[in-house]
Length: 599
Image 1: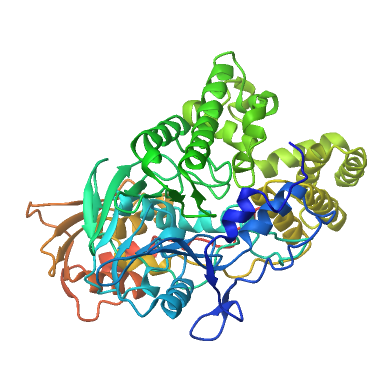
Image 2: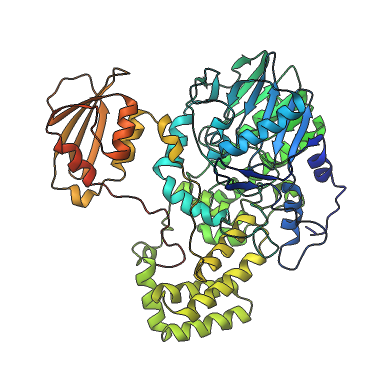
């Protein structure tokens, strides 16, 4: 595909269509005055492409850098560019329905205030989470209070998957997300130009209100504040819990994050469950069959809408075929004996898909999506016994560096391969040098130079951010604090709260300790038994009255306080209270700033 483009293309027309207004200055702050999001960060992305950015990615950044309130259809508005995602507002009989309230409360509140400035001070009468990713629910406390009685609508199993991603594996995902989001990078032609799916994520206050209305089947109809919805449940597509929906009385279709103007991730670089591209394609086909022919506009949780039935069908069909092609061709080559890394190098994209801007790899990529499909079906092991029991990176690096004659020799080789244009192998050698001796300044700088060159040449925004963030940290750019999922904890079920203890237990240290705890929740009437056994913390609801080392009677709010401070003040305890302090002493704290590009 040619990298030249015209700004009279329908993408640019549609991205600007319906603009109502925005905020000035375009910075969103928290209660202490700290900037949590700068909507003008990509304002520099204008004019001709600089040498430091791929031209195709520069085009995408021009589109995703726009911000403000936009009218999608009569009674339908979107706030775009106030976070990585969009917030959509649908006017009902008495107020406004909020769809996907962004990452943080501050940004969602700013978006709602902008809407009310132009459309009137309508109360929020319902909130809809299209799926279980944090940029589609984290800002909910910016549009409603925690004790709201308005309906909170989500696909079934939403809470289970929101917690699995953002709490259980939250620390690791957020640290890895720091790379793919380009968190420490300045927004410049040499730094971040967004994330392909939108500008970078905000850094404000995250919360979660559990759903009160579950969508459990395709075809389910609900009326919220006088607005009729027809839902399509799409589990295991872009999220394990996700849904599209149609407004039949308005001819408006919401595709959640199942169809955006990019090739999406089948395995996001921050880490997640591998997505099922086969079923993703089939749900897109189903959406075309169910809704597209009756729709005048389609919008998604990112990017800009598409208007006109024919254009909608073309857009959704391209997206459908994209995920089907990647899946089927990867499986074809897997069954001929090729492994993921090989397939990623040999699989061509059909010209008809390659030439469509909406299927370009700005966020996902053909390379890492193919590897994700391989992983989904066959796992991490490629079948070669030589790869079955390899050394971990630091040990492996020391041996390679010894074979190559020491770190200085490896650095010379890094420079030689980089000068020859083989940046991929130069990066691999440089990483071995750094893992063998992380204090070696020339090795760190040699690797940083290679990663920087890889980043500046990448069409994929998340690859660019990962490469440039790696270079930044190698040059001494220490990780700064970033958004935390701690604000979600109050929404967790009791089982999920106990899970957060179990995944922090040091099993080796706890292996010689046994204990049993009976938890009686006085506000809900629930009873749980917890047993520390064989280095594992097992817990489950119980109706039995078996004896335990200690019985704890408390409310869920008191349980939250106990887990946060280990204080038993105001809590009824019968038996050996030291069991609780022993248990908490056997847990460790996760490290939100663990090393990535060095051992």
